[in-house]
Image 1 (cartoon, helix red, strand yellow):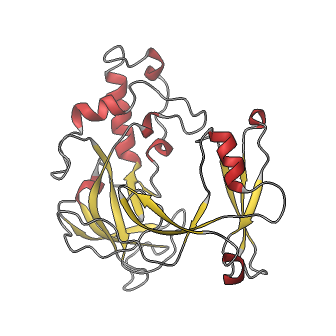
Image 2 (image 1 turned 90 degrees about the vertical axis):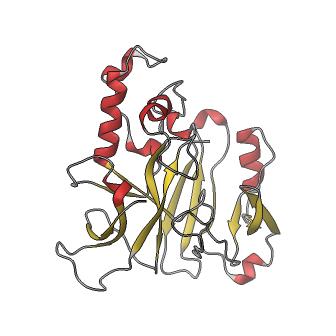
Image 3 (image 1 turned 45 degrees about the horizontal axis):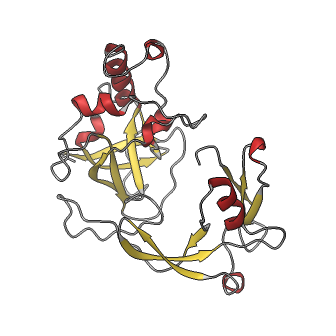
Amino acid sequence: MILINPRIIPDSSCSEGGRLEVSFPMESGCEAFSIPLNPTEEVLQDWQNIDISLWGKDDIEGYVCQTNIGRSPSEILSEYLGLQVHLAMKGSRPRICPPTLRFPDLDAPSYFQDGYPLMLMSEESVAAVQERVRGMVGMQGIEEKWSSDTLQIERFRPNIVIKGAGVPFFEDTLTEFTVDSHRESVDKASPVIRLVSKCARCMLPNVHPETGVRDKAVPLKVLMKYRRGLDPARPSLSCIGCNGVPTANGVVKVGDWIHVRETGFV
């Protein structure tokens, strides 16, 4: 699945805002398709309305995406994955993030994310994990290639990446911040983002983001050795990065500045 290539093609001149184009590896034999980025109400009337279950909760309203020509996106994806699946767009019904120890009454919406709208991680944290990986080469199934291979931050799927704190895992203690283009903090220039929990890790970061090949040890075995037990709610799991929720809509751009508003325990 990691080799599927989705691409957003914006078009402000049309009512649908552009297209989502999806293509597949050439050897798969699956044809590319595209769907409207923001379907109109008229279009949605022709798409099947379904309830979607995620993490044991049937709380997502969805619409099964369709195209005007050729096979449906669901047919193409089902052939590629070898499973019966649907490509669905989330409907307007709100889906609320799960509560955390720090925010037992959390009332923040999300879409199809694992649990929260944002995940923040620092480059220094990934560099620290890489150093640990290199120190464990030859142990617990960690292959010699990791003496020189780079641990890509893309493996961890953050959507906000920061650098410049000077120490790894700064995000563990960053509880509130803003992001904008100003080097110095400007009041109300952007909405506050709150980090609400650490991000507990599964096997997915072991999968190479470009080849789709899963490593048998890296980085999970390393994380389990020295980043385990940091989340009181899930002490058996390792953690890296932190989940966040914005307090309002905003825009984040590459090269923006992070402004710390509050520190503590995430």
